Image (cartoon, rainbow, N blue to C red; front, side, top):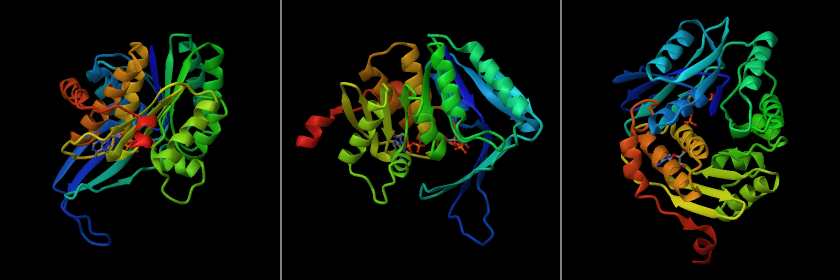
Length: 315
Ligand SMILES: Nc1ncnc2c1ncn2[C@@H]1O[C@H](COP(=O)(O)OP(=O)(O)O)[C@@H](O)[C@H]1O
Ligand SMILES: O=P(O)(O)OC[C@H]1O[C@](O)(COP(=O)(O)O)[C@@H](O)[C@@H]1O
């Protein structure tokens, strides 16, 4: 069973603009609304791949109700705690040249009682066959060690954790050794306090340090350059797939969704990697924050190149 946790869901409002002019009037050519937030996008990808998950977290107000309806329409099971405020709307400005500017709101405040309610519910799903996907930012009222706390609690019941978070959330949760991680390049560079662009070798050794801390699998995403996949005994580099990109928003979540689906289906590492690459590249072709169609993922999976890192570095 897969449980996705989105502490801070969002309605993603994607607007297409020819060229974004700061400090001037910008006319929008097209608007697309989607139920978003990292865990929710992961659930949408899992559904599209043919799997099931339960989407959990906090929702509030009309936007929260819309998100629940949209997920129900897609046959995605939900178990959200209701909060008083309104679930946020995140603006994604997509320019003709492919550049994307994101304006993410902080999200409604969560009370101590609401947080405890969610933690109780999560605990109820924890067993050795459950994977918890903890992804995205947290709203006000939630301490930054929350992912660490959830990881420790569900680990006690034998459950696994896949983490996709940034900054202090990422740093804190590492102390509880999540089982799988999906940092992107800049998240890793920030965590290791590098003030320059890390080389591939440096990225691999940063990933290896994470494995040494008890993580089983690290996927380091590199945007259009592809991704690195590291486990205890295998290391692969996959060059980015060439696709006609619309919006890169949700690509990381599609990769995480594929990782979670592959874990649940007990797929071999190489198939998992192909699925991650196919799903994430497929996601960038969609308008707004939409998961890729399974048929496109299947097609893209055939194009994935898995380069063993040792061989690649020796070249
Ligand atoms: N322009 C692109 N073309 C093809 N694949 C892409 C592109 N942008 C992202 N991807 C795919 O999506 C994955 C995740 O993207 P990335 O931007 O690194 O994640 P995040 O959104 O978490 O920062 C990449 O590893 C890659 O496989
Ligand atoms: O919780 P955060 O960090 O504000 O991110 C939320 C935003 O990220 C997304 O989940 C997309 O994430 P990715 O582009 O990393 O896949 C959006 O749907 C959402 O608006």
